Length: 133
Picture 1 (cartoon, rainbow, N blue to C red):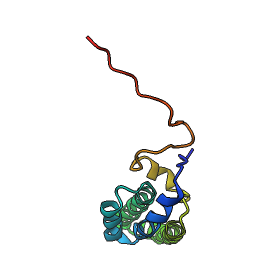
Picture 2: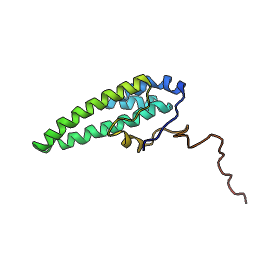
Picture 3: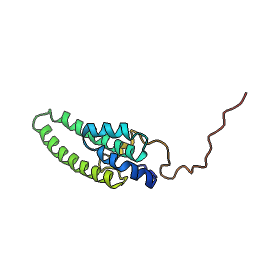
Picture 4: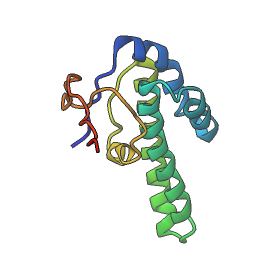
């Protein structure tokens, strides 16, 4: 089950440009990760883009296998291209939707820090106090 992040409208507005850039090759991914590291919405899309890039890399490795690998590569690249377009649209529009098929992998990177996820934290919880001696 994917995590649900509660992004503020300000986070989305400030980060949606870099969120879309994150899907534009490895260079765009690095730029978005470095420049937008303080924006949770941007980092959400960085982790989704990273999953997509890893999928593309895996397909490149599979392409070494003659015939069957080439077929898998062509089909996989078409799927990755469709996922890339979905990611670009989600990022630039300000949508926080996981990519189909590989979006779950993106959550494993856990790049989105702070804030609330899925309503599990209320913000009123205080950390435990350390024991005193």
